[in-house]
Amino acid sequence: MAVIRGVWAREVLDSRGIPTVECTIWLDNGGIVASSVPTGTSTSKYEAKELRDGDDRMDGLGVLKAVNNINTIIAPKIIGLDPTNQEQIDQIMLELDGTEEKKNLGANAILAVSQANLKAGALAIGKPLYFYTKEKYQLTQYLTIPSAIYTLISGGEHGAENLDIQEFEVIPASFVEFDKSLEMAVKLFHQLEKVLINKKAGHSVGILGGFTPNLFSNTDVFELLVETVKASPYVLTQDLFFGIDAAAESFYIDGRYRLKDKGGGYKGGELVEYYKQIRDLYRVFFIEDPFREEDQKLWQTLMNEMGDSTRIVSDNLTATNLKRTQEVIEKKLANTIMIKPNQVGTISETIEVVKLTKTNNWQIVVSHRSGETNDDFIADFAVGIGADYIKFGPPNRGERVSKYNRLLMIFNELKQSQSQTQTTQTTSAT
Image (cartoon, rainbow, N blue to C red; front, side):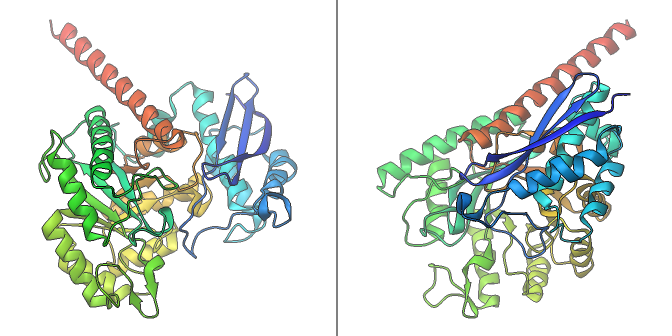
């Protein structure tokens, strides 16, 4: 079995021009892998801590301290180890850091090594990363491409102070195969641009690549999306549905949820009614972070009134944290979870959260972050753990497209494998 021969990290830039960490691992059989860590804009207080330099360089956002921690502290401890022992290597890093928040070595340093090591394990046994992940963790029986969630319009911290809700999404129906799903997203994206130009609503894009039109209210977005769908070959509620990432923490001001849709903002119960309204009028069946983390009674109310027909999605509330996720499950605050490895810091800890949510019949969304790189690790990971959905952003910009292109490759590999299996079975039968 191959062992780790070398580990080296460096500072690279994410899609926002902000530094992040990349780690390269060499194996003694000549194999080389690299992985880089995404970074978030809208973050939870429960997330593991990135380590930033805090000096005059790179506006204080440099990660040379995290890079140095990999090269001088982590590397000597894992060189010579078998990369397929993921849990051992992750545990070594956790013990070296010694804090729950990973504030000493930095979650960005630890995850860069953890992701690269999972890739190295797959390379060591000569299997694709998605297949290796499936076989290693046994979280799914079948390899399939998760349903995709495509952001088309951005607001909040991802926009340009144009809208309050952070993301407006289209979600192809589950029966739509991934290649057709991506085609749908591309057609709708370009059709939406035509609609925006025609209405002189503005068609610039935000940090994720979603359009950031100037509109009078958040509800206006759904009218634009309905018009876009009507001008396409697709049918709303038959071929696709709508979703939102509310990121409600960002528009909670002075005791109210401040949406442009209502002067003076919404009280908690009024916001519940708003979500029910857009569910009924526009078939918004996916609602992420509908309230701030402290308003757990509102989460429970929304679950009681909409949970049987709507994905109530926890991101900041759970932060891919095992203790937080257990608490949210027990209180029945949501029925779907966002999985983001950089929120917790190691692949092993991420897997434990996935196991817990699958045991409790929650649906799983594997998600990108606002600050991404061209690393397509997360695409293989989502397939390998049997995620229900993936959320990688709009079908534009290289750092998002790299994930979609990787999923297309996996989709074709799985199709080819199924075809070969069927041919073999037919031949054997005759």
